[in-house]
Image 1 (spheres, rainbow, N blue to C red):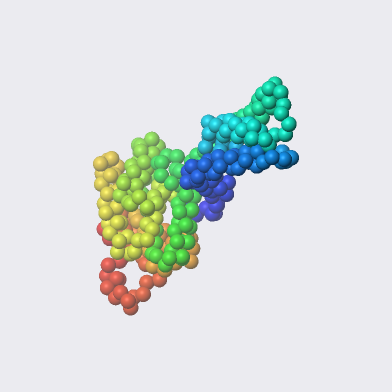
Image 2 (cartoon, rainbow, N blue to C red):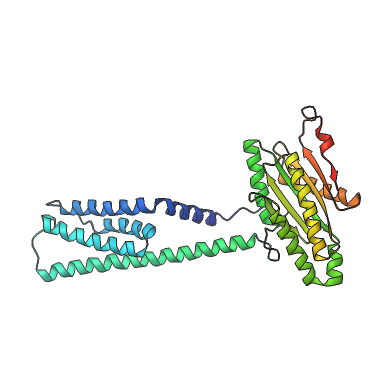
Length: 319
């Protein structure tokens, strides 16, 4: 159930950050690239200049293609040629040349810039396709194929992140472990297709009854997990008291004798690890099983009983 932690691939994180940077910076970078073209053209127009500025145009062209796309890159390439041509006319191009030479040089420069633009645009599309494929693979690897919710690995990643957040900000976190009692009998009597449908209904019910910030996952077989970020014991108990009957009602509507054992642990201070939360929630779930099944049992880690003497009366098993 608690597989080893595997970090999100760094290449995926880098590509996501670059994509975010692109969205915010595109107009600014394209505008700066055009200004840079004009600056290079001005330097070329300085009388007596013997430096070759051809390679310098490639930088603003690359920026324009990357942030503005192929059309913007073509426009920047034509602008670069026009700026170069005007610079020559202003006296920065040396002694006069024939019309044929001027046209040849302009055409050669245009061809070079356009080849560079289309080559870079093709490379960018290839990298974007690779980024999209990696993102899809990353998402699919963290999704349970049967129910469409997160799998055990994705749940572990989310729990790791929430424990880190709890450590940083000192906020509570609640983790619930849910087991579907009687599910094996559904598979035995009605077949695996009926069992698969039951699992999907459980996942849909869980997802519908929690907040958008909460995490619902299938941990394996007929076991599910719910992570409630920044949720204290009273709020968590209120959620579970709504969630448990909703699950039971969904099974009644389906006509299957499945009930649910739920163990939930709330950590008021940063827990030692995700394993601590998982193990305690799992143990509480088994306490419900031993006590007669179909119930909820909660526990609070690092609770100061002196500060809240009435809490013991509010926690424990609920029908």
